[in-house]
Image (cartoon, rainbow, N blue to C red):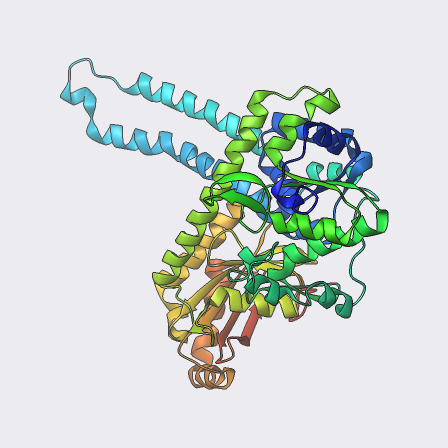
Length: 484
């Protein structure tokens, strides 16, 4: 029975011992990105475990690629709550002092003098501000040296799989992906709907995002087949059903049975197991002899719980925001909403390079030669809305917040006009408004918002963004023309 159905069996104690001593250890993208989200002690203990097993570590090329593409989100996600707290702490003493002074407590009660209490408040806020500043200083910043990536580069030097050489080779990795997903064959079927229309370009090759897990899985199988490895240990922070065998969709029993069967069926592997990142660190001291604190393990487990909750909350928040005014432009034949931000992201991907949705639902980021460019994407009913005060205020607030978070950021805005079905119509309306629109928008850009780029366009019936008007702001380098 065990030989015929290995995916339904947990390794024996002797097999677990062999896994830790002999197996090729493969990490998924999210496990690497969690290093940015962990506190320093847990991060250091995880690094030491990886360094101990360095000679047996390996990652598929697609894991390395996705790590590079998503590290900005991991960094900004870790810094964002610190920056929000800093903003509140900096404003609290002045705001409270103004409120207390307006109350004139000393006139309402004999001996009431709030000055000492206010001084203590200012002192406490200064101390908290210093702690937050220190925490920000210790965390990686997009515009500075990244010590976490540097250390990972040393650990995985020479231990990364080869990239697909041609589009034909890449497409072969995804050849039956949709059919697999239809049959719920892992991994990747959980991403089929959410990433159905997403893609990105890397070194001239087009990667369909929904096939990311399938690509890394098939790169893993190819590597194991080539090396003749008999034991594989896979570490991931992914919690979806297309990786794990779960009882009632809750309690994890082990790897998805079909992963085990496919890997063993196509290679010489006779032991395969998967660990979540916390479990990997928790069990490692038996073999590394390095100290791992219970606090670090619990911090990673807490991160895993929060990541799952935040993922759910983020999707709900995105849907709410679109419903409140950033609604989808139109719908595809399948009825899936095509958002303004996603249509603009696809356009950027084709014309500028790696582009991806930001942490905020209406934000798109692109990696340019001049650095990361952040775009606020606003869906507006007509071009006249671009000149309204509330639109300009929202843009101003976005730029101000982004520059507070990343002082050297490049910030742009894309206005997606919903009422025009093609670029010819919007071109005609711009021509009709002529100098008034041009002058007003340039004035908005030059004197108020100081944007690096302003783009106006629409989304046609084919759900593709069409740019019809663009200007570069006063802070834009001369090298940052229509095409970077």
